Length: 177
Ligand code: IMP
Image 1 (cartoon, rainbow, N blue to C red):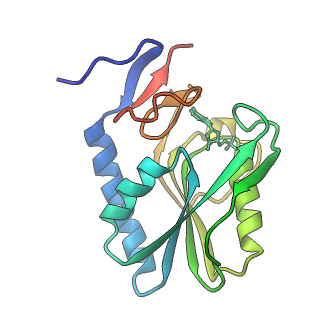
Image 2 (cartoon, protein in one colour):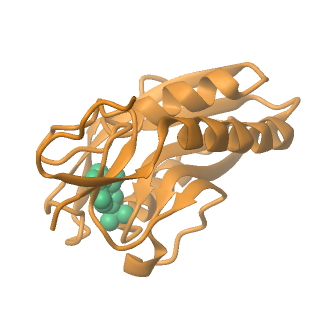
């Protein structure tokens, strides 16, 4: 039996089992692409940490992990004004970097991060996102790995929040309008 959803949450979009299976598939793709290379996973705080932890455990090559935090000046990043609030601990010079995102929505955050990180001399730079909402894209960004495409509804759970709540839901769920 699944626990009841909190008030405000409408329905489950992806169950724990669906998420687990899909992450394992994507992790296998990542393993194949980066075998024999120096992979560093960079997660964007805070939303990506659940996905990062689940993905990293399924990747079958050694990986390094680092974090950065950003602040954006609108609730869904729509203004595009993004800045780094906590930078990486270590250099990415010469490394194969995989940026791990919770969701690519308008694409503005991902574009900013790609541009910023590209200037630091990585050997390669790609994006792996848990969720992709291409219907709201304002700028094109190359999404190399993604687990799920989602409809134009606000979602929570598995790291994604609404006013900092619901990140710990084990499922991905749609908020009531
Ligand atoms: P973008 O810059 O528009 O692509 O937005 C990316 C950021 O907006 C994500 O990293 C999330 O923090 C936030 N975001 C966008 N859509 C949702 C959602 O449906 N639920 C929770 N956070 C979201």
